Length: 483
Image (cartoon, rainbow, N blue to C red):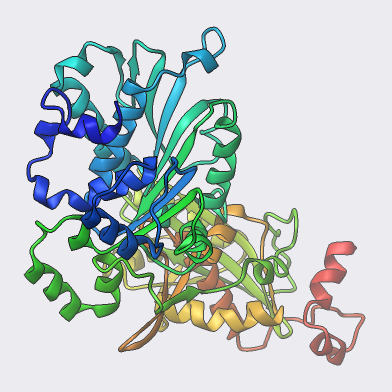
């Protein structure tokens, strides 16, 4: 039995398709995925959504779905997972004690739980399938045919060690990790060896589009409109789900055309670009230097990004100026939950160890941060620059090499994930959806405020004339490091 036959069976998936007339595009996609025959109507949909003239006659090795929001991606990925686990027998390819895992990878745990609810709903409410369930956990379901459906978050480390006949990546355009600069590419690379021992294994990745980078964009550029065993399917929301009200989509386009074109039109955004190239940033990173001790020759500046302790991290950066260059000396991050007063106490101790009596920050929580720092002998000053402007102004220093950064992987990942967005009010720089930039913000704030020190710091190289320092902004630091 193929999946389309299972969709028509009243004892299987047919009751779950509430309106068959609105499901035509999804049936077409599934037919293309498995190389099944198509009607003339489906062929037209296939040509529109793939840019290909001839439908495939064999199952795809990879499929990339670029579909607008509310198009039905999560439910159909769960449907595909259940069908592959329950209707295909992988036991002949498994070693004793080994299980075939249908791996559903989501951007975060919330999204993973959404897909798992769909999976559980299908298995529990279809009697023929419910009898196959032998064990159900929060993030996995085991069947009596030695198949397991398991959801996981996007992390290239957690997908190793499995035997995977089907890997599903949900909302892959929004996979973010502060442990890696290229999480989508690294997760996909980690999955491929796990699929080698199962003939006919398949990878299916689905997402609404976002910026023109990452594996989803690369797959679209390489394979859209081209015949082969890689299927790229691009369709707006209402093509895949006509029940979504057109007036709601029209209102979204009126409010923000660029965002709506991506969210509902399934078009990659042209108003986004990377803030900084990773290779350029790494030229400013001092390898294996994680923190620099206090040196009485320099004047230090601190910058904090406060948090209430329940959601965002509370971060701080410390920096100083050497000639034309700025040097990052320390960064701190306290993850929630925490006591804001206790963290402020800890940060003030560090600031005092660098002889810092004033710290910069934003207008977070009004008077609260100023009062807490003042109680501990530190003056809290409101930064005149917004987060976006701090990033904008530190970029020329990074590009010109007049910036010395710490070897802090999480900070580096946050800097490289920042995006520049062009809008009606000019450019803004911020983290992408689902990501964070608390450490990068504290580092950029410290660097930029250190850059405008009044120039009264001591001569960094007493044995050298001032001109030597100006001609080589990093000479002081290099001399100190090799001493």
